[in-house]
Length: 361
Length: 151
Image (cartoon, rainbow over the protein chains, first blue to last red):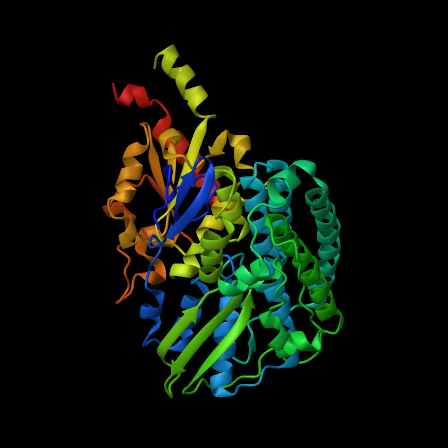
């Protein structure tokens, strides 16, 4: 069928609204978008090729640098996959500390995503509030792990450093502050009439379309699909984790799901601090040969590692499936189509929280 | 130094426009550059405006280990920036390739081979305060008395 297109509009790779380079080619008819295609390939470093044939001690640092925004979950999934291969037990205190680090990382990632969205719809005030709140979360992450971004906190059979009692008290104090501020800011977002004009009913991803595009993470949960990798994780099951979802299916829902998940993360961390078991943080163990497939819930959705190692703990084969590729697919083939203006295209693209670095690796 | 030059120096020191380009990093340095915008570090109090438009920029922050996708394109971005201009390499990746510079990798560091780099900020990733300090030092070193040296 012949399609009439008025103009082709390329966005990127360098664009004021995009954190990372990606080229978005939109076909517009008048002001309405009739088709979009994303062009990747600006960030391909070949990290899986570097990983092959190296000992796990090196690969754990490489795994963390697949994505700098959600580095803790990459570390966690890789280490837990190695533990599953070698049947290394994790001490209960270490398992809880892992959850605390992971949830702090999720909080900062979601705050950054919501900052990007607010910045894209030109609501800079709320964006700056969220970025300031993120710095408080980063402080807590630094106090727990010792680094801001790439912290390599988890090691096979435990975690790297313990949390003293006074640090736990400081953490729970800051969580109260963060939650108070966050409730105010999410209320500002929820009630803002101008924000609603830019967000409600824009970038609709219906449940069927989300299932068709295999959307994961907050993007899927905003379309009413209650999928969450944390449901099958043993520590999260102990904590009684229940996934959230919304049924609005638009940009507004995706941002609000992230706000809700930050509050949920705060309550998970509080629960961890409350029942933090006493004991050792490192049980020890030897990484052995074998192969496994292991999934975890990254801030953007399901993250899967397929690992094959030899008897000395060297990585023979590794495949990583990151969540953003499905969300980018859902974004450019379902959400953007029918957008009323080019300004909505960038807002919709950012609302799906695409992470190009971990998509291309 | 003429009075005109003194006025130019004074004005230019408070109006630095910054663009950043990610040529294949892990995103860690990107978010540390974004964190400079936060009210805690407040990059705009020094008169630095993060804009991400090369045609208006003075300082280009280069992040990442130079992937094949950026061949020719990075030089094009660099040419679009009007002089006086300076490029700052953020993180270990543009300096040495960090841990991506291994056998079987696609990257081609250092970025110094492809465009002239005025300053380098090592770290994986560097803290926002270090990035801020580097931009301020570059401002003083490159832009002061620029017309005097380039008549």
